[in-house]
Amino acid sequence: MRRRPRWGLAVVTGRSMTPVLAPGDRLLVSYRRPVRPGAVVVARLADGTVAVKRAAERRTTRTGAPGWWLLSDNPGEGVDSRHRGVVPEGDVIAVTMARVWPRPRRL
Image (cartoon, rainbow, N blue to C red; front, top):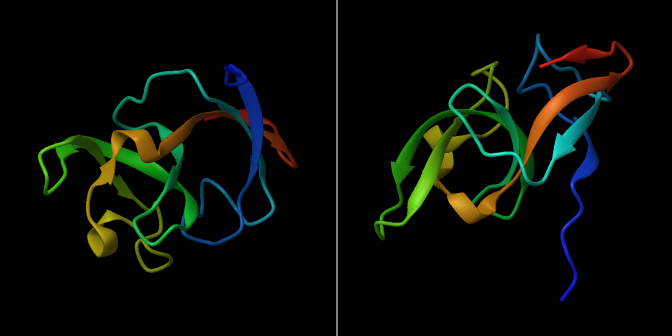
């Protein structure tokens, strides 16, 4: 059985997280860090889209499984839990640690 890596990189593609993150920003992510409210995460939405969103709060899915309510920082752009519902805990792929390019900074 192969172990999941500890760290990885993600690239922001849309404008849903502006002004904090812009398209093209490179993010250092942790696959093992626990999700906390307010954290910026990489998640797979119900339609299969992989997106960078902010974890707002823990909720349960329609089937009673634990999950997260994920929101965009720029509500006029993109798709989030307001459109797709609660994201199951297993579909939150990683927690963002820092922006590494072009303007390095902790998130």
